[in-house]
Length: 353
Image (cartoon, rainbow, N blue to C red; front, top):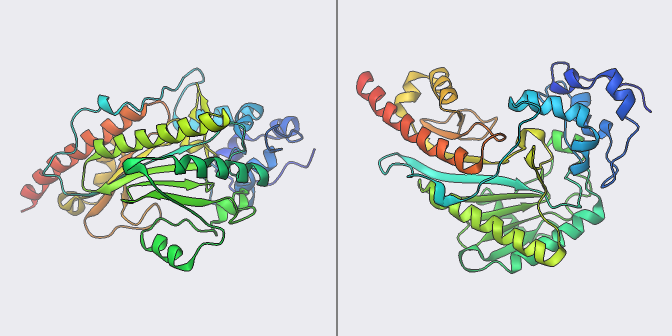
């Protein structure tokens, strides 16, 4: 057993939930799937002083073997109780209505994460597991048909022309994120990693980035229901292929839903978002918009991503929750909420005139 570490992120959930007693009890344990340890799990909180959560799982076992740390931390972050269960529902036929025609939505994007059983998650996955998993995905991608059919581009040995095109399309993920590095997610970079997209560039899969699989459906305009339908079909096709070839399935936990490397993504792992112009709310101010989105269980961001600021009047509006709600419920909340925001925006513009 190693000494109890100094946790630099003193206000993180890790600092609160990894006590000296639990450290002494759990720090000597290694998980079966990838030999992951509690020290590896909390590396970000130990190394950096800016973490809110600060912990990653190295495999499905981590959530069970280190449950005395993960369970209370997850309950606090997601606001769930110890006996809550999670229900997944990708049935797009249950979505009522869509974004109204007059809402100035520029684009729609829905992403989820998925992890295949028997392999470590990105922080813990072994080199051999990563390559085997990539091999399964190459075969799965080759079987995709019709509008889902496309090409897989491995990061290793990538042609410069292909690389530049992926950068221009904003599809490429790159190395250099300090959190991912500290958490062990960039070991053996770039081997075993790559990007798949269909011909229309409306269905994408990232292989072995922060999650084993990050599956994305997107297009211009506001057809959220159509984007969700394509996502559901794509996930099913990949799942069926992997299962047929290897007998392996996606890791789905009755308590935590689809398992991801970061506990903040547990449950659906889904972020359903639109870029929408909100001139009235822009004038009203960001604090007012944030407060209204909170009531609607949505999250507003500037359109340059999480850390980017605000550009003009276009906002990225997405579902706030991941765990404790089904995919259908979260997409429905986003559709209804964006329609509500636009209705109120028109009222604000009239009032401001």
